[in-house]
Amino acid sequence: PPSPTNTATARAALAITEVNVIDVEHGRALGPRTVIVEGGRIVSVAPPREAVVPAGAVRVNGRGKFLIPGLVDMHVHLFNLSSRRPPSDWAFPLFVANGVTAVREMRADAASIQQIRQWRRDLERGALVAPRIVAAGIVAHGKSPSEAALQVNAAADAGADFIKVGIGGGAICITREAKGIGRGQATAVIEVAKARDEYFEETGVYVPICSDGGIVHDYHITLALAMGSDF
Image (cartoon, rainbow, N blue to C red):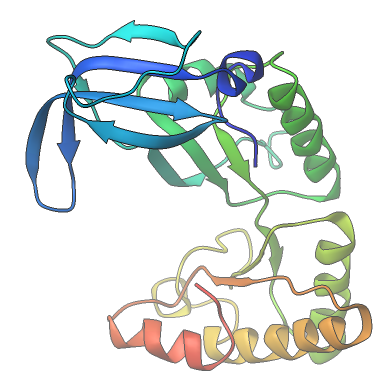
């Protein structure tokens, strides 16, 4: 996916100098460091005296500042499918300004997927400041094998990055135990996974499944994965 920055800048070398780097793996601050970015990728993190800054690189003075990995918001709703209000793309600059460089959209439809593709094109050509977007949480309830197949095919044909398996009417993220509606999440996951695998056999296109509901205890994650969920 494209970088959540202006493409022209992303393709030029970028040197963030004298910045304090937060090492999230070991929970410590490393600094000062010079961070070199080329082609939208970090290629070097080194003390200033050891850093080799490419000729023509854009320099950003990071002295007294801190640099952290980009944050990912794993559950957003950019599309107001219930209220039918316009998409919440006004939030894109706010995400980026607060260090969120990627988001995962958790409820969409086929039209929403097309809008996300347009945003990606705008991002690639530098016309949009926004995080990267993983699409799109098209929901499959899997109430029956035939319905699961229709929902999986529709999501995959639309170009969804993953299929969201939810349960319950109107409250698809809430567990059956809490709402007393819908069907068991396990059955829904199994039937949607079966339909997804059949789609893969027919087309060669594999669409991951997100089990979004019914996770009460940590071992439920293991069960969801065993039943066919990818996450």
